Amino acid sequence: RLKQEPSLPADAQRVVAVPDVVQTFAEPGDILFLACDGMFEARGMTWSGVAALLKESLEEMRGDLPRVAYKLLDSAFTRGSRDNISLIITRLDEVWSPASTISRFDYDALGKVTVEPAIVNGERVDLRAVDGAAVHPEGEPVQVTLF
Image 1 (cartoon, rainbow, N blue to C red):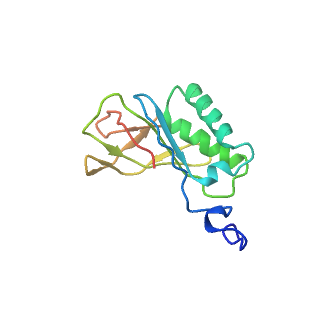
Image 2: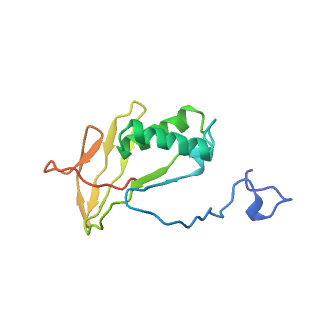
Image 3: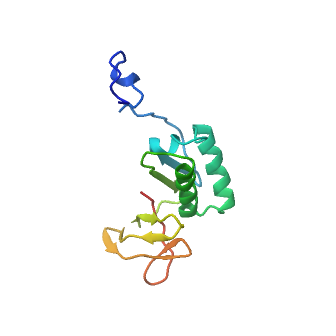
């Protein structure tokens, strides 16, 4: 229904497979935020509204990206988004690190975090959640990318 208006070409339909592409220069400390259309369908969740909420949440949560992600997801849901809501938020580090960690965080409606097994430098590692952050089994915090 959102892609089937016969009077419009494919790239002018309400839902299109043509991505928005923006090229820019990033600096260390910058935040990269990507979200699907479900984030922007709720009341008040315009591009500028989400940007303002992101900025406010980063300050309020003192840069704790998993908590910021949860707040943004929760805001879109409670404001009425009926679509799936997915996002990626990451901070660009000042230095390149050969170590990489990829992890998935799931939050329930009460904000309880579940950390799924992660891939750390190509090996599966069971991370655990401590105060909303991912922690390696030896107790060391890890850098993570949400997906």
